[in-house]
Amino acid sequence: MATNTKEAKAKDFNIERSAEEERKLSFKDESCIGCGICEKICPVEAIELGPIGAIVRTGSDEAKIEIDEDKCVLCGMCSVGCPVDALDLEIDGKSIKGIETYPRLISSAEISDEDCVYCRACERICPQEAVTVARVLPDRAKLVTGEIEIDKEKCIDCGVCEEMCPADAITMEEIGPNEYDISVDEDKCVYCLVCKRACPEDAIKAACRGCSYGEYDINPEDAEIAGKAVIDEETCVRCGWCEEVCPKEAVEVVKPFEGEIEIDLDKCETCGACIDICPCDALEFPKATKAGERAPKLQKNEEFCIYCGACENVCPNEAIEVKRTNINYTPTKSKSWQKGLESLKS
Amino acid sequence: MPKHIASGLKYLAAVELVRDGYSQKEISKALNMDRSTVSHYLHGRNLSLSSIEIAELIIKFNPRDFIVLTDAIVGDKEATKTIVKTCLDKKYSVEVKDTCIGCGVCVDICLIDAIMLDDLKAHIDTELCCGCLMCEEKCPTNSINIMEES
Image 1 (cartoon, each protein chain N blue to C red):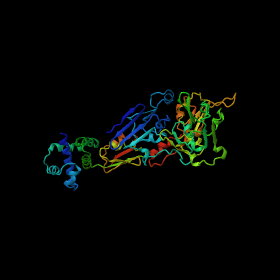
Image 2 (cartoon, one colour; image 1 turned 90 degrees about the vertical axis):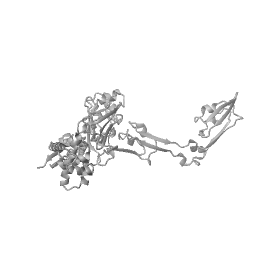
Image 3 (cartoon, chains in turn red, brown; image 1 turned 180 degrees about the vertical axis):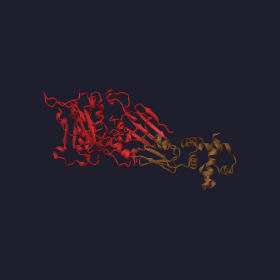
Image 4 (cartoon, rainbow over the protein chains, first blue to last red; image 1 turned 45 degrees about the vertical axis):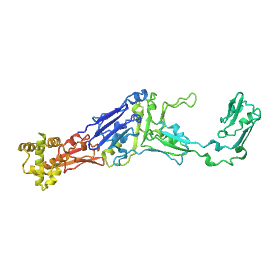
């Protein structure tokens, strides 16, 4: 009979069984958010959630979950329930997330290429650093127009213009003993005229064409910003921060679960474990807004909560309750799989 | 010795198959042996009476012991399947409950390939099932029921 083999590498591990077909369940600790959904959904009780509070706060080298390879039957239910793809079951090298008969949680995060202006607001806010915005800025020289000339006869090589130029466009080079060459890099110059005004010898002639004639000779195409915004599927947790901060409504996030989170402030001892574990930055210690005011102990930003339940697991005082009222998944004919996914509701 | 017992088992299967109207060519294919050997066996040549006697004993074991032993002795899946199917005359009815999670443990354990997964549920071919009950026993969700038909 085919028995399971387990292969561990640091905190990650694979469990395999090969016979008629090859089944391989892999766990990636870095992606795991400690929600414990796998432990709840496992039909054979093979999974145990570790002391995630301690693991997250001490940087312990313990894995966040443990799977007993003698109990695991490689059914894959944990990998389907996992909201962040930390667990994945492959059958004959193909992830069951791509196999039609298996249900899949419905969730996504997408940035529309058409609407994105590459402002990087999403990149800055993402709690998982899952967004990368690469952008190519326009040529600065094409956005300004003007003329500049330094009269070398008048110039006394004082270097005032070089020191003051805000665009670092002026360079003085020593070409011999007490002999200098001064030059202006017209790709860098923005024709601000600071040099002209500061020159003690009136040796600089410069004019900004934009200032006198408006935008008459600037091509709007030259001002276009090109780029590409990418969300890393592996690290994204679908919290929705990017969608919220996007000024152009270019982001759409679909969350796998619906629900509510309740905090009992009387029980909260402000240890902060929930804040540390929350993958969505959906919990915070609020600051008082006025002198003499006392802010509440803990505040939730439910808009960004994915109802994973990690905070509830980690709270030592049972002050947090996460309820899941709906699980969004693709249809399956299997009654036991429907039941398994529905069991995640509370 | 195992070779001798294997030939006894193949002999018994071959006799059954001839009775069921199969040609020597078909039998040699189903039992993975060459045609001349099939012919020899059917004429009582090249095999000892004692190996037939042992094979007859094995067939009367309970289905699991019979299948496991045959699989170990014959060492060829197709031949094992033929021997088991031909020499066991009992019929089994099968029930797979909706609690089946489609883990495939039963598929892997079945020595005669009678089980396949469809829509995340095990389907057992009653034509092939020989009642060894290994799947029923190993099913992690106790979803399989195999009953002998009277």
